[in-house]
Length: 452
Ligand code: UDX
Ligand code: UDX
Image 1: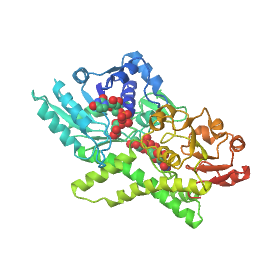
Image 2: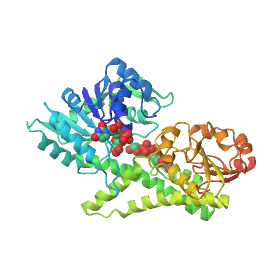
Image 3: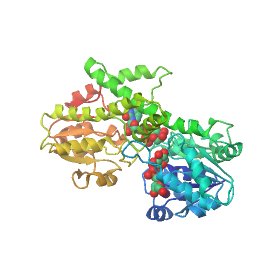
Image 4: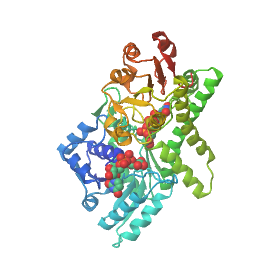
């Protein structure tokens, strides 16, 4: 298959390289010249485990090329995935101007039948607008289909999520589009290209039959599946965070409660980790966008208001927890471990660390911080208002308390005794429930966590 992917961010780049790994010819397009030049030189602009080598190998094989030119990519491809950003507007609605702009440019360039696929997360009904935009701007009346194919890629495990997904969803209006999209994904459907989750490497093997569910729906349902899935996952997190707050009042342990709930197969044990709340480029914006579009269509989805509210309050409660542990925050030095919104990514979008650190700085505290990969990106948010350190120990050295915000593996295995002796006061405030309270108390820590 000949595929174009427009937008080479976290989603577009992973999708493009994985399609190339499946044996397709892929052209990745981005309007950011600097990014494209770097990619051509084999420099990957984001941190995503396993991505570097896959990009380099596929570019070397000639299956993956990068360009800034939409017309060149459109003319050469049968299927065009749009993966440009859909950031939130101040109103909570998704900003669809990049999608519209790309749809217009695709329309100008189309010279034969194409399937134009929404890969970016968009509100229901966007497909209809994309179709209209392309129809009005392609004066030659070239045949085309608009389809929806939402991504379910978690940053940090995006390659595994792409090559070994729980399901592939496509929303189409014609058999022809469904057949072409199925062909794009065939190696993943039959798992001839797969991902070894233990070894964390791509594997090529004989086709296993139809292993991955390939769900074909109409375009609106497919668009909705994305918003409904992400909002449900966000709801699960807000729910367990609310339960955690209740546990603190009731003297229960949220980890035990979550385990007991999760063993019920109807509930499941995933996304039941209480903490400082969800961040990232998807959940916050998708829940808001889902709420806005439902209001626009005439349904007040109030439940989602509460999901958002609980997530916001969760950060405020954590800041209050820090103040309670310290009594006075002013002039204290805090060691902060973890800046990215979750482990295994350098993404700081909507990261809880931003609100938490800003609150400490506003109170007149000093912050020393360490993150295994997000420190460069973090400088854009904090400039030189915080001090960056080389590892957890130098961060803790001489600090008055330690705050853990992101549960990187490196922190789970650090030498706690050494951290204890490095700190001025043995105060450890854990926003991700990484350690056992009894064990921490045995070491001598004044240990604070969530819902336990
Ligand atoms: C984006 C969307 O925000 C998300 O809703 C969707 O589910 C997937 O795509 P992400 O890949 O994380 O997510 O965004 P980002 O890393 O910002 O990448 C977008 C890329 O598109 C950037 O490289 C940007 O330069 C490029 N872009 C943007 C274009 O090529 N053309 C444009 O007109 C706008
Ligand atoms: C999400 C979706 O999971 C993925 O399918 C795709 O649609 C993109 O958006 P991502 O944002 O990369 O992926 O990360 P995810 O693992 O879903 O975590 C999102 C946030 O929720 C993180 O801040 C994480 O720390 C938080 N989280 C997750 C919790 O607080 N508790 C949990 O139990 C799980």
